[in-house]
Length: 69
Image 1 (cartoon, one colour):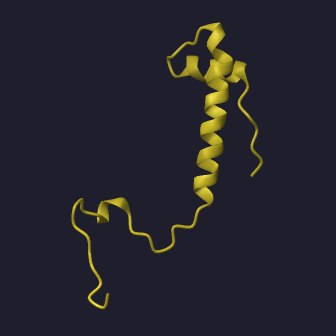
Image 2 (image 1 turned 60 degrees about the vertical axis):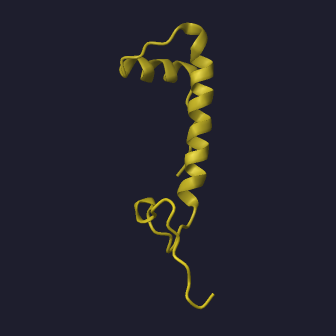
Image 3 (image 1 turned 120 degrees about the vertical axis):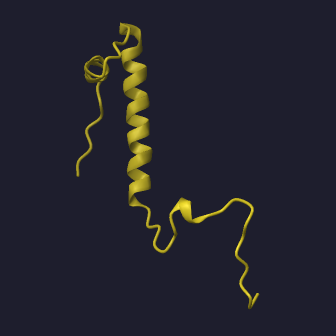
């Protein structure tokens, strides 16, 4: 799926649509931040977690030890 970067005017439009109007001097920074977050999430989506159980399966302070170890 092709990825098109968010432009500063689009960032301003989306922010206003969400009820968070941005000052003009923030459009570029917000667009750059959104594009960076999108690139990180895109990489995470490609990771294969295979048999890794969900985080809710772990209990802090309790580790399972293999009897054969």
